[in-house]
Amino acid sequence: MTQRLTYSAHARAILALGLPLIGSHLAQMSLHVTDTVLLGWYGVNELAAVVLATSTFFVIFILGSGFAQAVMPLVATALGRGDETQVRRDTRMGLWLSIMFGVLTYPVFWWSKDLLLALGQKPEVAQLGQDFLRIGGLGMIPALLVMALKSYLAALERTQVVLWVTLMAVGVNLVLANMLIFGHWGAPELGVRGAAIASLTVQVLTFVVLAVYAGWLPELRHFRLFQRFWRPDWQAMRQVFRLGWPIGVTGLAESGLFQATALMMGWIGTVELAAHGITMEVAALSFMVHLGLSNAATVRAGRADGAGDARGLRDGAKVAIALSAGFGVVMVTLFLTMPVQIISLFLDETKPGSAEIIAFGVKLLAMAALFQMADAMQVMALGLLRAIKDTRVPMLAAALSYWVVGIPCAYLVGFGLGFGGVGLWFGLVLGLTVAAVTMMWRFWHRAAKA
Image (cartoon, rainbow, N blue to C red):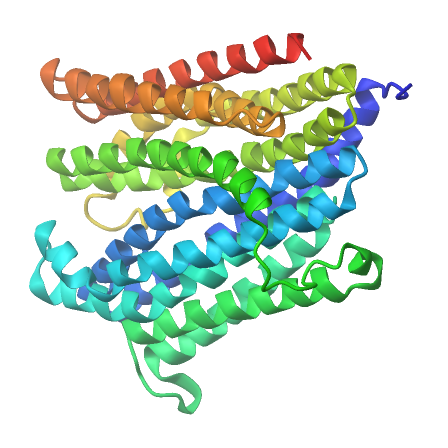
């Protein structure tokens, strides 16, 4: 009989796993922030081009990352039942599918100028965007491989290395990007190409470090992760594919909701779009904490599911949800009591337009407080559902919540009812709330039968 853990023991285990993952997610965000700041100093067209290029890369990455993310629950479940062979099989095929996806999508990056022109971008910006993506797009394969290895190591509860390697990547990117964009320290001045080379180099270096750690660390060698790596395992590949593609589509549906909101906010005005961007950065930083806790919940619940410990699965889920909700309450309080101070951190208040951006940002931060709990609960429910191998129904729930409820309601309230940008964010609140309710119901309905 499996020994029942106390709630405090569950909390300690989730935090031990989750805190390094939270740090890793926050560090990963800082990679994007670093490039944005550096290119903002370099030139307006270059900044606009790389913002567009990285958005294009990110959308495709989100779709392809489903296979890498599927590795985490599969490995956790295999470990729960003591099947080390299956750990190797699932991880290797997650790596295979990541490579295949990267190869198949690279033509999009090579001919991205035509895509950006079709989306109404200026020719000079589209050309610079293609310059970035023809180099940076090569990073899709190592980026997905890094995601798969991070999932594998997280399932093995080795999250500290994930944090330290991500922090290393931030430092390397800062130095390389600075050197190659501006031509510092004897390097050629390459502008957007320099940013792309730095990004690609960091992705490759991160993959190499994680691969060496995962494959040759003495404590992990018994998994023989890269043994006969070239041999296909069709059964394991089908399993990873079946679990992974709905995860990718679910992520695409959610990111699409936020991208569509940003596009509609741009129709309203520059001040509103600037406030939207700042407030979304604040909300995203908070979301990284919930995402890290969700990842930890996936591992813990997957282990319990693999071991046939239904009580442990439910108890761990309750604790993970409580931790995420507790942090959500703290952030709601901050959003409502210190909105001006938070928004002002991102602005030079002496510059024209800053007061208007702050005033509108305060309103959006109040809306962010409304969806903070819903966003926390939907990502936690997704993590728990992945642990029990339920990804297709959540994919449908996400599509309906975000594209049938969220985006149409945002447009209706924002433009039809005349509430402007605040109305657009009300659509976010509705979409995320519907997703949170439906996905939480789905998990507890499934968990009750376990």
